[in-house]
Image 1: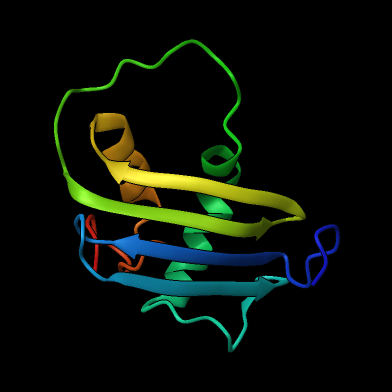
Image 2: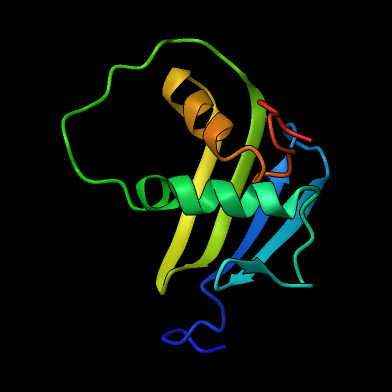
Length: 123
């Protein structure tokens, strides 16, 4: 795969760390034309693809705007880094659970980050 021509509509690699110093989990989501490929390694690939199709554009490529007010709550030490391609656009996005806004992003994309449909946390 070249930098300018992704092979799939969705080709994402997710690296999840549950806590500092903990082992990393690596997952993959590949899909074309709404169909998950066999290279996908997430626990709930259909839910992951649905989350990406529903929230991917806003999550990976947010529009600039005024600063958001976020609740100052802590959701846990988990970190996930998502890289790859989404609809021909290069993705490099970091997820954490450090405040209310980040927790909401995590929950929206939980199946992509190694959870299953309906989960709100890490694996």
